[in-house]
Image (cartoon, rainbow, N blue to C red; front, side, top):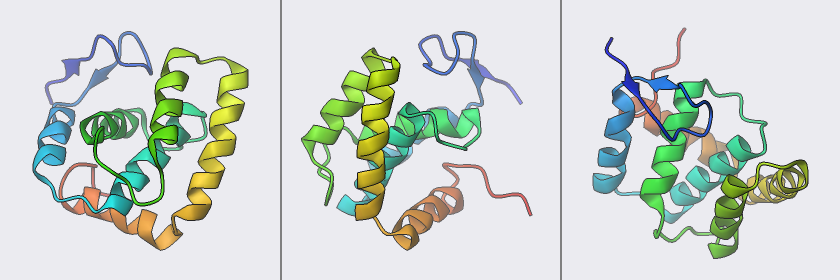
Length: 135
């Protein structure tokens, strides 16, 4: 598989990510996302930023690209204050900011039911945005 270097990827300066990541923006541009699904993308972004996300590095990259592609779309439960926090946390990777993101991420996850989040991630896998789960 040919890999594409991503110069500004926040996970690593020399990160190489599979080409399917480039399709994430295209998918987000054409997919009909429910407002609660926009919330799911935001919650995953918060989890990435607080360092608690257990996704593989390439999946984190996909979710970051989806988040960026969803900027400007309204969520159901998570408003602009969450998007402002994401932007601030991207600029400040210090421990106080990480703790603040963690608190807000936990709050966000209490607002989004587990079945909704799992359903959204399953949709991403089913539609080829995220790799299929290995059995």
